[in-house]
Length: 249
Image (cartoon, rainbow, N blue to C red; front, side, top):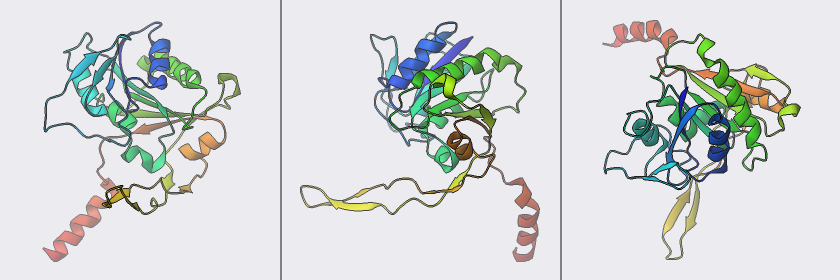
């Protein structure tokens, strides 16, 4: 199997190296990742300038762009591989609930939605992970069976793994996304020259951690695997919206 690996934490991130080491044992891999941390970049593409790509001593390719840029280039065939699947991660920090809207990790996987196998985004549920090896092994196991999975086209698998040794995991849950409250208000500060600047605040509190959600699975020490769809159409609203438009237009 030919695997394109990317992330949003940057080409030097330890989670990326751990993932490449494990997957590279029995897959042909190419690693194309941002040249720096691009967390929160979501699905953005760089359209206002050309991109630069540099192959490091590790063999990994660093790109001065977003995670989506990296996979867009990596799946085009201009490097050494035409991949069967994209794996994005391993992210330091969970990507659950509403976080997936902003996640560069999930976005990188999403850019591989047209390939032979469903792309995988993988994150460790800790901002200071001690067990990247556990998440890497989970992905390794998923890849070994990915040819047998029956999913709708363009499905993305969003995988979150507790920061635990492999033997301490409590199982695997197929989950839905939970939900958070609104984030805190941006924080206004002054720079050394007296100009106002604004820090984007942290994520909101978890509001929906019911059984069946990704938040619940992680709290129970279980791996969470959430199938994500790219089609954002709210089909249930189409009939009501049509009736409303008939009344006002």
